[in-house]
Length: 155
Image 1 (cartoon, one colour):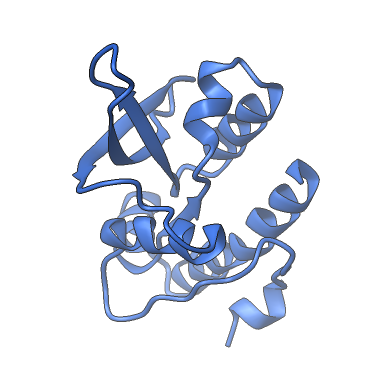
Image 2 (image 1 turned 180 degrees about the horizontal axis):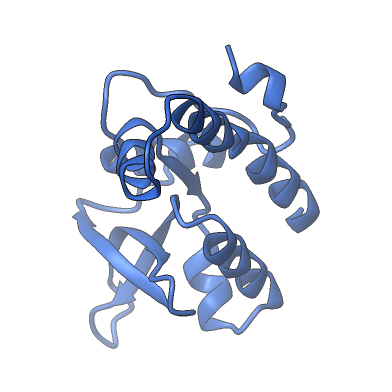
């Protein structure tokens, strides 16, 4: 799974490379280019189990963090559950994190959910909880086994 995620993220980040090429062709400086890319492109990986992997010190969490460090515009959304009391009642949160470019992972948003977001099938519920962190006019959801190509990003 981690290998598939890495291939998918690498492929989708070609959109960022295409925007960098466009900015270079238009002779924009690096600072302006970074601002432009931040405005025009965002990539959120919805990984509902990332929080549990991190709590359990699963090496897969480290792999996801490596991707965030490698791609500064990449964000990861996950579902966090916090036990309220000894009775076992839990509160659920949708959390968005990113790399702080210093080697650490920084929490950007934490939104309390009215209950467990995974009621039916896990895959669409996983995508739905991350939508609140998206912005802009266009949203594309893809499966983890879809790879992107630079030629497609140029369109």
